[in-house]
Length: 249
Length: 136
Image (tube, rainbow over all chains, first blue to last red; front, side, top):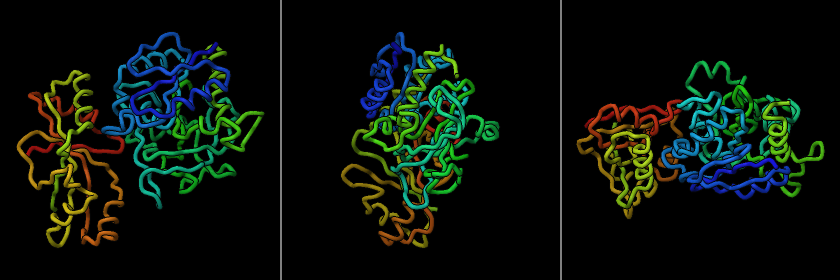
């Protein structure tokens, strides 16, 4: 059975609901502590929370943890790696997206919101822009998904990344009709190019600010498409990707 | 421009974690301390007013000062500053501040100058922050 490691850093607090979503998608999941060794896993999820209490910066300390070195090696082999919310910040700080580098190519900066300073919690519409291991939904699919963060604004100072940012934008904020308006409330945090989820060249790594595990069950969301909630479909996509020998189909 | 430094009098877990992480990165750093740094402009000296707000400092766990001891400091500042603090000080607390910026100041104890640059890679994400060395 597909075996997923759900990484638990000190301060991670979404591991249980992530595990429930993994199981609901038909996979086996194990919560792995940051100081344990990773062995025989098919994929990795870094869930939301406040790893290391967001000390220095959201995700900065966890990104330098030895656990991330192991995950980066696994990502280079094509195994799927999903970072959700704080996990997204960890992945970004570790330099896993859009390329597997030693230094961050992007940042998750504090939200820019005309009304609310700091932490912002709502449901946002997003659209699938690119096929990844987690978004084997149809490109252009639109669904509502919870967001809850204070630092969710994708930003980069690298001109090269700026030029290609839409190439790696796998999930973008949009209106209910799919229009990618770059203003609030469609774009809830000021993210460049409306990015909600950023991927890599292979599509096996996804840094995703919204929470798919919070819209994976019927009691969490009224939205359904093809007999699955949008969140669950992301985890089902991960399973399908692994079953297809780590290839996008 | 006036300046106020605010440091914790209780153990600073963020500085402790930063030190452990930098040492794990094999940087020859003996110790690191953290301060909040406020740079502000006003027609009169508002330092005492700022110190009395429990937003910037809580006298039960913070110490405020206007000068720095000798040492090597790295200042890390967000390139785009939120106006939340400015609005709170002016509109809610009635303090006549014309401009205020907040940053983090790290006092790094190391014999090697290169360590500062290496440490900045952890302490600053250049995509939305900037850093500079301050030697008082």
